[in-house]
Length: 267
Image (cartoon, rainbow, N blue to C red; front, side, top):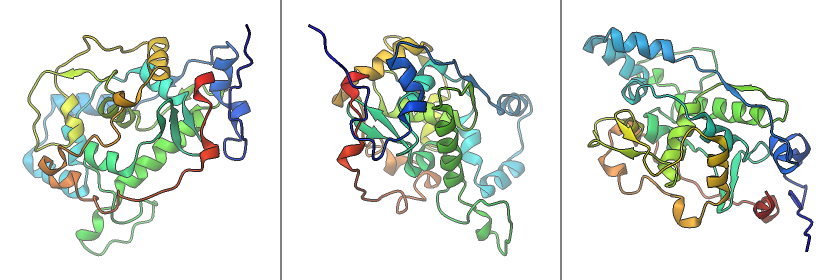
């Protein structure tokens, strides 16, 4: 018996970019172009590790709002995992369409994982500062905007590269998807942002990594109990203030139209 599978969406009102999406190629048994991940922080962290900064300099980095990024450090990207997630990103809704529903990287994730402020002045390129307090621009909002923009561009079937803060997406996935998260082999230092938990030694035993086909299959089979919708509930009270500074701004109630849901079973 044969079945006619519809790649979705059944209703085009919201997901109107389906024809140019790289997921369409996968459905048609055509492998999309592999993405080249552009990253500019490797040399910086290499220089930083070989030439530790003084406490006085670190103080000004903290004032500027970037101390959490230094604490989280550098780790290689899992290209397979990130490409599998990009295939499920929808530019129309700025969400990942997963078998268990829609999810996205929120301002709360950026605040908790990297300790970046999500409140304060707009990062626009124009500077009009009057006091030290004014110097905390909303860097977390800028990171979210750049991440969304790069994800949207990378979903095109013609895209061959992607840049931007891809490491925050990897941390987001490790925090929420239990079947792909490496196991941590050290005690967590709660004086650092939550994302620093993956800075030290990890083990990938019993989890997949660095394989696009395996990660794609893992996401396709994802079940409700394998995804953490609220991963920070039990740790938020133990984290430093830079990770909780935007707690009022990161909470909201929203409505997602039912006709925006993808026919996941057919992908």
